[in-house]
Image 1: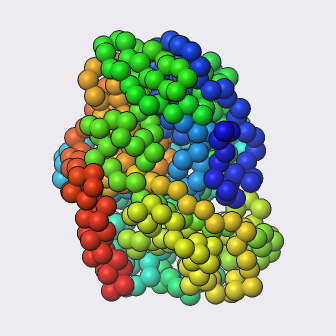
Image 2: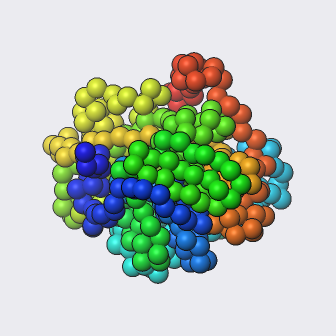
Length: 426
């Protein structure tokens, strides 16, 4: 059966489809990459540019997972506060990792320019505050990033400044970043795939990896109809890797998140809502995030599902969340509503590492992956080439398994998250 993307605005507005064959028979490569999202394709492209023979194996189609479904918000940092990384790795290593997170945005921009990827790249992002406590948190955050991490792209906005750029009464202020922004994530991913193919990478789709035989310099990735023998293997499946790699599967939890896309609003109405075309996310634990598409639709994301099952009446649920922020859109219908899984870690920090001599992985972007996945791909390529210093820094982030084992970790997480939901309301 032919694999397709989930029914979404992104799939409907994709620039192109990347047609790749199913893996059949036995193949050989220097490096086999499992997963054709931004992480895997970035790693493959970086390796091909270094002269490696690379094969990518994808269970579905290119960009099928979070890389082709996400909110598209291109952000500095990681899914956790830098204090979490400082606690595990110390301030010097944390500063180096922060700098790499900023580099991640530069990597994305460079790829867009180098490969002429049409992905609606836009600058500007606002972290929005709903209550005074959150405004105080943003003020402290700005001070820390400027003083401890030398990040100077931020400005603190009061309610008047927010409302001069966004027609919503919900927010009392925010922290604006000129360096962050937003993209069409699927078109960016497809653009990376095209660049990788042109660089000599082989991509197989519709070819789920069922087993990996791991031997030094002779790893074999098996699928239903074929296999790839490779010196090194990179696991880049993130939330969709399943139990293929038991050593790392308990360090992440797949969590469902959801987005709706309205009918086109027209340029004038869209500009009246968000005049500077920035992306916005509030700072609740269960947050809302939104932005305009290139054809002037409101893309509004939020909600989470720890069972990964979509809420009933998803379209209406997303529309109601949008109306809480923009009640003036009451006459507007949702043309699309979809969801997908992100992989979170216990501390929300990224989880990169090595299994034995020749196997590497990158996962656990915790909803912060648009830019960080491209960085992960670059670091994976560096590690394969023997330049492990930057990649190894991330090993210093302490990652605990989710409590409760395979059977009980979801209900345990739900109980833990109840506190954060309550805090959002206070």
